[in-house]
Amino acid sequence: MTSAAPPGPASPRRRGRPGYDQATVLRTAVDLFNRRGYDATSMGDLARELGLTKAAIYHHVDGKEQLLSAAVDAALDELTAVVTEAALPVPGVSAHQRLRTAVRRSVEVLIAHRPSVTLLLRVRGNSEVELAALHRRRRLDEQLAELVREAVQEGSLRADLPPGLVSRLLFGMVNSLTEWYDPEGPDDPATVADALTSLAFDGLSRPGA
Image 1: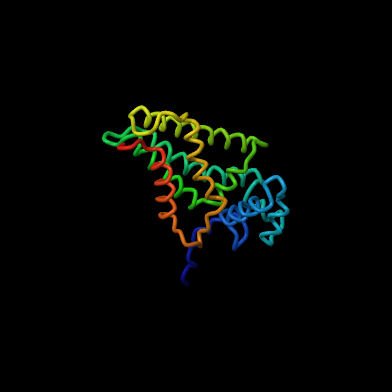
Image 2: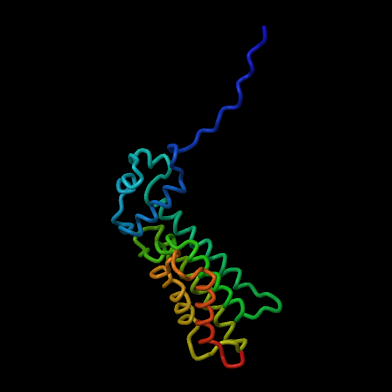
């Protein structure tokens, strides 16, 4: 008589219901926050959007603020990586070149993460999560302003405009894409990034720089 085969390893328990994972819940939440407003959206609204019960939603997340944090952190992490890398001096690479690269790559990040960046730009500091996001945004402005200042000092950018103002205007141009860019439109991300960067720096560069 043969002995029964030993039982195989137990399958790991998956959190949540079949067909819905945390990424799906997050994408749906971001879309809903952008359409209705974060403060005006409840977990019940999200449950109805997904066709689930509120109890099922809590299998995936602890609450609405966790979803907001995950969304804005994803956008901020990408933008911070771009600006932080550009802020590091590189032998043979001017501050002007690093600034230009930072702006171009910021366009690419925004287009790739447009829903999350849109949500990020709408936070107003009404919670600890929003205050932390605003602090990180200000830090990005400061880093970019310092890079503008370096480019002015090396003589590649005009010196008659305050670096902080230039930084805000550059980010303002990039952020405006959340209002009008259509991923299904005629302009692909590379074309938009090239056009915005050329427009910004052809206007800022000194003749012969």
